[in-house]
Length: 172
Image 1: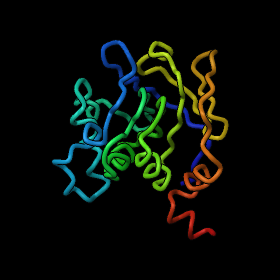
Image 2: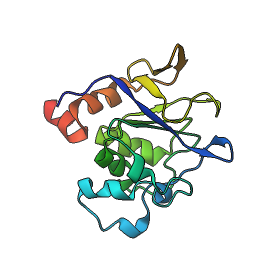
Image 3: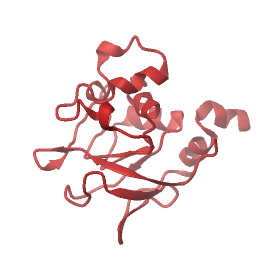
Image 4: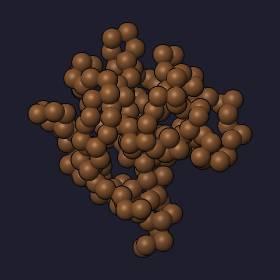
């Protein structure tokens, strides 16, 4: 299945106390109680299962959704499950003010798009609105407005378009 550089989807805006939810660590994304699950297709059911206010995410998420969060998304451990659970659900990408370093590396290696949108105000986007995300330019379009995020690096984009790091290496 060909991958696109422009994604369009329904936006999940993760809010805590009226602000974009920050410091969502890998245990909140994918609880360590489920680390024995190795089938990626089964990991989706556990996404955000340890994130207060979003434990029903897997019941409501739809393929094509995009997640928006605050600072330091995916901080903590190196668990790959925290990326793979979104892929299992068909979530297309995560946009955040910033990402934990290990999460960033895992996402890139897995061919899962992440876009940083530093300084984004909490009230800029509405829950479940449709947005368009350009991975090459980093531009996010919402209605008649556009916002400049940090584009994916050329290598990260090439890995994404190839389907992951191993597929990218095979093409080299």
